[in-house]
Structures are given as C-alpha cells and as structure tokens.
Image 1 (cartoon, rainbow, N blue to C red):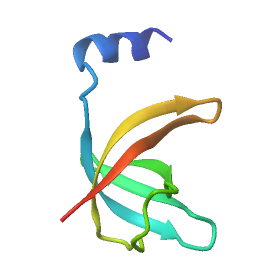
Image 2 (image 1 turned 180 degrees about the vertical axis):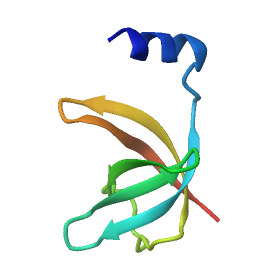
Image 3 (image 1 turned 60 degrees about the vertical axis):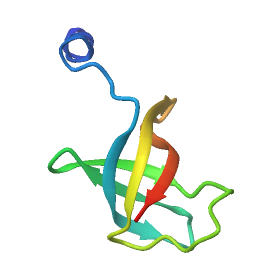
Image 4 (image 1 turned 135 degrees about the vertical axis):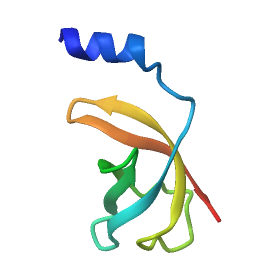
Length: 79
C-alpha cells in the first residue's frame, strides 16, 4: 500500500508513544488506548502487570503488528 509506505517515510515510527486508556474490559483483558488526537489502538493486559487497569490511566507503548492488525505492545503505565 503506497500511502502506508509514504506515511512511514514522512512520519518515522517513534520508539514509544504515550496515550491514555479510553476503554478497558477487565473480564476479557483487553481495551483501547487513545493517542495522537482521536486515534485509538487495541491492547491486551500483559501477564506481568499486576495492578488493575482503569480508564484514564496514562501509558507508554510501542506499536506492533500481527495478523489482525496493529496493536499496542510493551505497555508501561506511567503516573
């Protein structure tokens, strides 16, 4: 996809992005992070996170990709 290739050239990926948890379903263990104005990216709770995740929490993350598309990986919750 030409537009995706151009976007990567014009806007190189950051090491880490920052955002805020906009939605989280504790029973299913997944949610969405809002970042870059009104962009949302899905995430799943990492096994090493023991604190409860709540809407409004700040998070740093890397954007990863799998067969379902892009998602937030390597989550680090910040104060």
